[in-house]
Image (cartoon, rainbow, N blue to C red; front, side, top):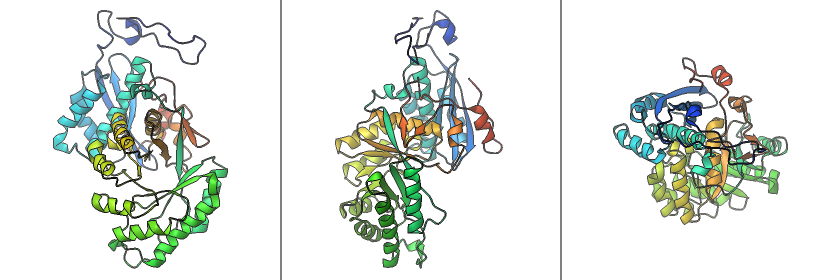
Length: 410
């Protein structure tokens, strides 16, 4: 086996690892690509969402850690996939991804939790390959455009329907927590609803939601960008009227104003307003994002890396979006593992706006990894191999879902 010596400044913080046969745990007559996957394990953490951590092990004594978006049955699906990757070379990320898509076609690998489960393995493979090759994960995606990726904070209040409370929380998050990008929910009760099932917004409801937008944007002004999330709640005409009503305010984007199934309605709403419209969180793989992009049905695309198909699939989506001059703001409700994976993608594509942070009220979120992830509203993209973060297994054990087993240490 070729023995790799140090290629960086010996005084640098991180130097090229010695990948000799001895340190890799393989015999001298094996080549540098002669590495096999030996196991795949999961542990579900009870965060503000149930985070599924995924670890892929090899006979080289190196393991990679990923994360799958929350969803019932994801750990079981990953267990179902294990035989399809055991004995395979973890460096063949694209081939293994396509292999899993094909093998899991009966379980619905076009969309849904099957794609989510594959995403967790795919992210772990990026972490693993980066460690084996001694490069950060963004390098596997083609290099980086930026050293830092902006994080936007998904904000909440004890009384989400109160415009004044939203403005106060926006001020606190900007001044005390250091974020210059925020998001608030608009699918909150105004107290005037007659029948929410019909998705129709009455004039008073639109005035209430517009007041939230006005109070928050006027409070922070140029100190922060503010997006507003509708969670697929409104009928097409109601979404158009709401988007039109907030056009005069500095709305970063209005997210998911209509249900995700009918892309023709999504396109109509987007074309009806100058308010930027974002969507994509509920779409899977490049195939489902393609029509959103090509029909110009969104102004901003919002794929979720641990849900949409993983890091390389998100890179493909961002590349196509870039052909249509559409920026990408990654939806993210993950632990630090999935968040850093999204940051690596954000570093590697030219049209990245930001990565969502959804756990600012969870005081132990940062404890799950040994490294700092978000500081002053941004994520410094790690230069360490792989994702560049290390699970704190004690913290993971403390916050596991009841009945879960902890992943093995490396």
